[in-house]
Length: 449
Image (cartoon, rainbow, N blue to C red; front, side, top):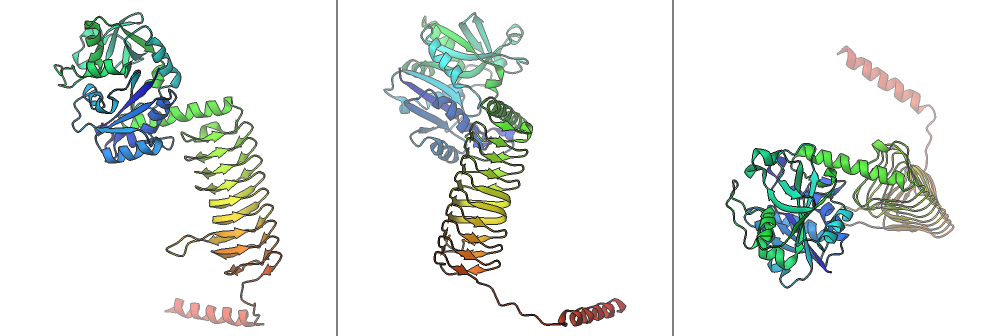
């Protein structure tokens, strides 16, 4: 049966004390919205609709960065969750199958939980996701008998007896698309907040003789982010889970609590990750590679047998082939390093192609930017780039060529050639002693004044 997703992402999040829409605050290097979209993507939805509101343009851009095909509707006035779902009706016109409503600020709903909700739809017209809360606080309460759900009561409208219930509402709901849209179209706002509650669809469905059910999950899955403190809690929760999964999958983390993953980090079995390593978005580490301490990686690919660091930075577009060595205080950006390349230390390679087996000496810099345009450096196979070589792009160094230490290379170097681009050394015997004597005398005179 086809599935559609509606993701509510219209809130401003005033308690975040931020100009940024709440769903665009980041956990694990990705907007909260992307976490929700990733969870829903596991259902292979035929249609995804994001309901934007505050900062709609930025939210829309972020949503389409994850899924170009997703629909965007705008909730101009935030009049409650039911009102938000109602805004998606035109985008879901004529759609068959079930609809799952998710929240852009609730990042940790597991795909398995959503699958369980869809399975429960075989028994109930409307299915709500609930959880047993350690501290129910101001959550809406689920009034249920076993799996059968009678109604949902918002905290503001609950009696003292109802507030004592610990089975709480996550807000996630699943129903036939046409039924859900029909129900939200009949919602009223006669409540303490004057809002159209999505949760009221349960009572409306039961008035029609339809059944409602509840599926429960661990409370950790329902963690919503409304404050900076909760954002920090969400980051900690994500990292704890990511580290545990990495260890379970055969990755060695020598100091797990100091490693930080992004939402899309991929690390292969038998890879070794040292202490204080930070993965930004878009990183893939193949099996058997090693990332040593204090490295920062983003938008890069590290192949089997390669080793990086310590104190190295791989920026977007860095591609390291098998058995590449990138040492300490090396930065790689938008560069392809072929098999067996060695870049030992204190080097910047940007916008470059480096052939297999080439050695890059300490202090090498590809001078890739002229103030307006970026230019590419191409270095062939088994070349030797001497320490402190400045490669002024665009420039090509051929296979097996060598550059002398301290050279500034501004023209192409043919294969097998030696290039020296430095001034001739001049030696002046005895001049150093005379200079020091003059300087010391000048300093002494200044001190007397």
